[in-house]
Amino acid sequence: MKRPLLILVLFCMVSQFSHGQLWKLKRYEASAGLGPTFFFGDVGGYSIGENILGLKDMTFQQIRVNLDLSGKYRITQSVNARFSFSTGLLKATDERGSNEGRGFEASTFYYQPALIGEYYFIKNRSENSYLFISSGKKFLKTLISSLDFYAFTGIGGMGYSVVGNEKLIDNPNGFNSGGFTAVIPVGFGTTLIYSPAVNFGLEFGGRYTFSDGLDGYTSQYSSANDVYYFLNFVVTYKMKTGRNGLPTFR
Image: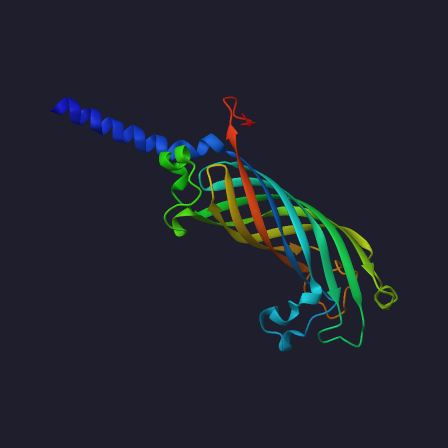
C-alpha cells in the first residue's frame, strides 16, 4: 500500500509544479489598443471651483483618439515588462468652459515611447489549466474566473506638435508650437482570456507630463502641468516561447 500512495503523492506534487509553470510557455505578448483621449490643459475647461473632479471638462468636443502598440515580456506570472509606443491626437477649445470669450483652440499630434511595468494584483487560474490549453475553450464557465486585473506605471518621452487658431497664436503669453517632454504613465486595466493565444481587455490610464504647453499655451494662472487620459480597447496575442528563450510562431 505504501508504494501506490507514494506514487500518488509524487504525481500530485509534479502536477502542481507543472501547472504553476505553464505561463512560461508563452512569455512574449504583442498588443494593440485603440480608444478615446481626454485632454486637460490651459485651453478650455472650467475653473476648479466650478468643476468637481474635472468631470465637466470631459466633453465630446475635446475627445480625440489614441493608438498604442506594445510588446511585453513576462518576468514572473504577475509582473510584465512592457515597451509601448503610442500616438494620437489631443484637442482643446474654449467653446465650452470658463473662457468662452477668449476663443482659443488647439489640436495636438503626439508620439510617445515608454517603458512600463505591469503588476497583476488579481490573476485568474485559467492559463495554468491543462484542460484550457488543450481544449482551446474560448469562454469558461464564468466570466469572473477568466479576468485579470493589473496596475501599471513607468516613464517615457513625448514628442508633440501643436496647431492653434489665430487667437491662440497671437496671444500675449506666446505660442508653443511643439517640443519633447518626459511623461509618467499611470493606470490600470483588466484582461479577459478569450483563448490560449488571445486576450481582450480594457485599459484606463493617464499621462502626466513635465510640460505645460501641450495645447500651445501656458496661462499665468496655471498651477500644474498638462495631463491627458485614455480608455483603450486592447487585443493581445501571446507568442510561444522557443527552446532558445525567444518568441516563436511555430
